[in-house]
Picture 1 (cartoon, rainbow, N blue to C red):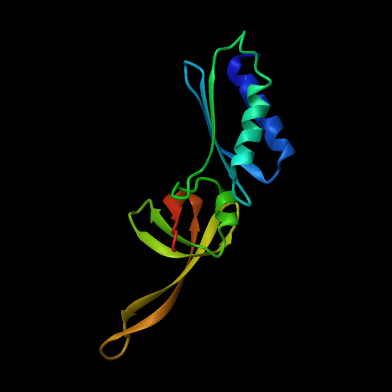
Picture 2: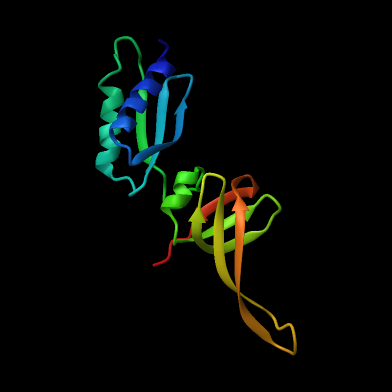
Length: 155
């Protein structure tokens, strides 16, 4: 088995043990630098990264392969890329940039394997008379229409 195949196999074994963790990205450079980015249904802590790192590192032979390994969690400001990430963030406010160039700041109220439902309030001109009124908006957005989506962190 080649180096990349062995790393993928070890990573999959480690993630099978921890079903709450999932892979965001695996990069293996030509000089065998391995970068694993994880996320989790309940977040990812340092011990999670250590456990996955050990599961890979302790099962690769350094005599056979010289490599560098980095296991990290997806950052708080990292864009979401998988439906599972949207599902874990139901109820949170997100900033979504669409392929058509629109930017929506809204709460995720539902998420499936195909799309997300966003809800927010907006100030719009009254239909009759002067001034503005607050209206509730809702949109179901397929993942293929999303260019980038990030959770809005508020303190």
